[in-house]
Length: 360
Ligand SMILES: NC(=O)c1ccc[n+]([C@@H]2O[C@H](COP(=O)([O-])OP(=O)(O)OC[C@H]3O[C@@H](n4cnc5c(N)ncnc54)[C@H](O)[C@@H]3O)[C@@H](O)[C@H]2O)c1
Image 1 (cartoon, rainbow, N blue to C red):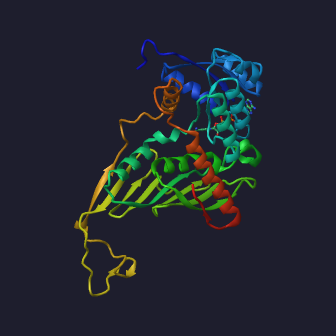
Image 2 (spheres, rainbow, N blue to C red):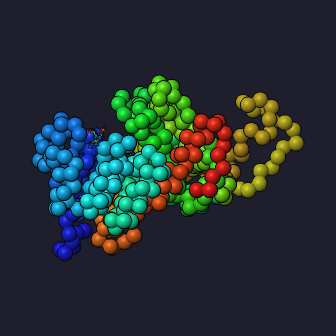
Image 3 (cartoon, rainbow, N blue to C red):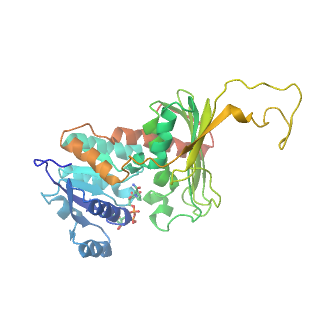
């Protein structure tokens, strides 16, 4: 709810491709009242025409947008390799900046932006918008409720079979590849949830269709309490795994898909009586893998949480609260820096084909 004295902020967008226009669409469709989109700058003339066609101003240059005194917030939604330059220019022009993910293509670049934010005393945040995804919130709430006991493995997967969109996502120098595209979201979710140090990173990367970049990867991160997070992103999977699969000491949680269907199976008794003789099962003769006694577990069905707002207005609220001095910034560059360190360790691990000891 906007109070009468609340200031309306004015947004300028640099880079008006798919994601830049998505921001505009969401801000309009939700009638977001704390911020008005004024105009855009894009190096592609046709994108400027598109902006004009929906009533936005198009600026002839980046400098022209940045010198508009009415604009106090700049969204950088250009391709990844120019985020650093554009963010620093906007901060130097006195703007608060929200940058699309991945914030940069290296930790060194991000540190430069953080220095600039400090120097010009502006708020700098990143659109790590998947912290409010309902599938993630559902998994996190249930795990943190203790219902499956202490978690020791969390598996997070996003899988498609259509390959990657052509263009910059397939080009290394432009910050392409699935680690920087989707990995950054999935690592951010895990690190947002688990407040522990990452002590080791192991990653396998594949270039199935796109030789320059990783179009599939498997990443294993170990935290200092022994918890293992396993993250996979694939663009070539015709049969998918569940979105989330979590092993706790007393049970297992599965969230099948983005629609949040899923279940928990947990044990209701602690001890199982072991038989003296071998058991003949569909797995052959085995005691270990024989089915459990039916009455020793319970199943809890999961469903979509209905109290979660999941769109970029949440990210803007977190930023504007910090700009107005109402609250601490929600998505902090320091958090993005840790994610960047993990991704850098993952690239190194994939290159050397060995686990990398970390202190992140
Ligand atoms: N948060 C999310 O869920 C999410 C989803 C998709 C994309 N993204 C991110 O958004 C950014 C843009 O991705 P996209 O899918 O919109 O790509 P896109 O190719 O559709 O759009 C990028 C736009 O940036 C413009 N551009 C490039 N260099 C520029 C410069 N120097 N100055 C001004 N404009 C410039 C291009 O002309 C293009 O119109 C990327 O960083 C991407 O990772 C985030």
